[in-house]
Length: 186
Image 1 (tube, rainbow, N blue to C red):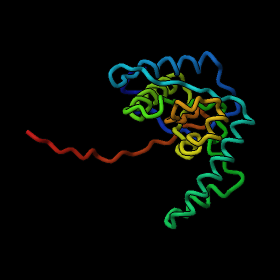
Image 2 (cartoon, rainbow, N blue to C red):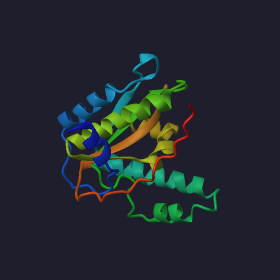
Image 3 (cartoon, helix red, strand yellow):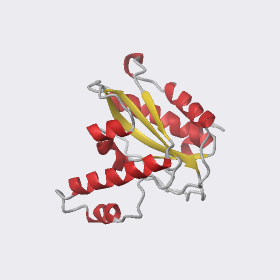
Image 4 (tube, rainbow, N blue to C red):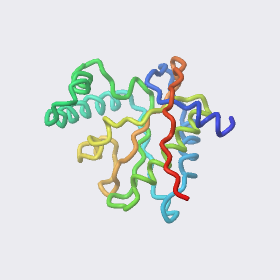
């Protein structure tokens, strides 16, 4: 696949088939993630792979409860509160795998390093005809002590990028993009 086809064709997937993603496929997308640039070439990312369906359901349930408590403090997020209150809503959309990209806690560029690795992972998955989505609803809960325990993540690491991976159940629609806002300074 041409790089431009991957960049322009990748979409956040929220509709997955029940087919599992093989360990070799997950290793391949993680390998691609390790080739992302990192600050000072530290290569700090650690990858936690969750394919246990019962654990994915538990994380979804606990993260929803956590987020609902947080949203209780903000009145302008009614649509999110409604979504998270639905017991049938799965924050992982039935994806068979979750890859949590983490970096050492307190690392100055943890977010940037993990985000770069996540983009490589998502582009590689797209090339392999796998769908992905960064799940923001999982981020804060995974950073709690309970979240760390759930995914066996050492407390010295901060989870940054929870990415679901799976086989796409339906073709993703084209998403229009706004024209870039560019300020030229010459």
